Image (tube, rainbow, N blue to C red; front, side):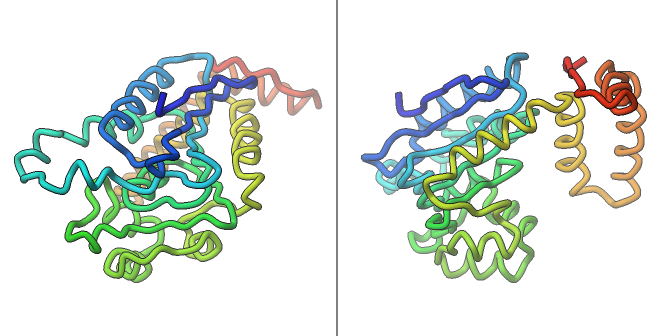
Length: 255
């Protein structure tokens, strides 16, 4: 039970890493369980938004160094870690990371898989892999530079030093900073707010943002235009606009 899944009212799922004795280190078992959970949640029509969190002291303090200390290149290849990260990377629904304490190494990379990051004032983000003779291996050198730009990313990656939540927010790594005691509550409230909106539109927005960020602008705009047009074939578009015109709350069905 190192990873706990809780389905909450309002079509929200909360996934919590709970290994306080190991500072929520991302062992192989934890990563495999996360992969199973996110695979299931992707297919669950009763869930429209998910929250990923750790304990109130630490989000995830990185990989299991003890398990990797004597590994050889072929060992790391056979681990095929990308397969356990894929269900989170490809999760089609909005995902919010609720971060307290340390989000270091793989923990920072895990948070960057989310679409929104809510951080406590005491949270710290970093990629300290260089301090143990390796580099980030789950997207740290790529997602970080896309989030904060080359120069901020280089400082974090080349020094291995963590940044505080307010600094992370200022550079664009964090969506919102709240008091430590309010992190999970705020993330769940935001998840419920998003889940109450049209699920198809939310999923399409996420898809376009992620796909379009690596495309030339004109190509990304074509994707957006086609997706915009497709929305007019949904029941939620008809309901949303009718409710607006009739000055009543909409009732979205995800169709």
